[in-house]
Length: 202
Image 1 (cartoon, one colour):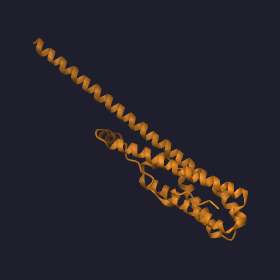
Image 2 (cartoon, rainbow, N blue to C red; image 1 turned 90 degrees about the vertical axis):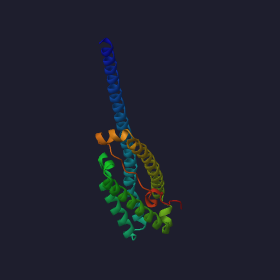
Image 3 (tube, rainbow, N blue to C red; image 1 turned 90 degrees about the horizontal axis):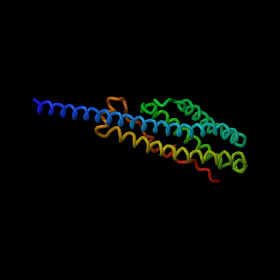
Image 4 (spheres, rainbow, N blue to C red; image 1 turned 45 degrees about the vertical axis):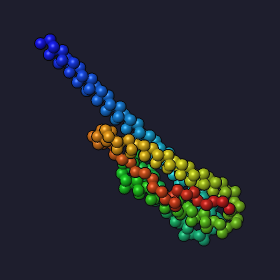
């Protein structure tokens, strides 16, 4: 009888330790997923900040170019329209990270804007007076720096997404992620029009 009670107590103790260990593992795994998800969200905010900086530079750039190349109306309108479209999808919630379609709309709008800016800067090569304008040169330098920062922030964002996605896809984390609503996030895809900084060397 005593031997049976002893075995029962040992089995109960092992079961309690197993339950505590399992709960501890689940809690730690869940908290790691939250931390990695928040890390992705933080880097997403940095990407948005750089795109916002680019949006803020465009009106001054367009106004400066217009002063020297007013008859390039089509290119100026394309930049303005692309800026408007990009601005419409820029201020999005973190939910866009969990919605691949919304993320792709964001990326497409930014890509179109980058393309329009490149066309604008190519057109400015035909205007020596504009290329010598101090305000234009300053804006150009700021735009180039912003495009470089966009590329850096996108790369950091993709790295955080890769880390997060690979973590939640591993076993046993995948089981916890599935039960807790953690889903894969979308990467920025390579797009030479969006990633490459506009040619600004004159």
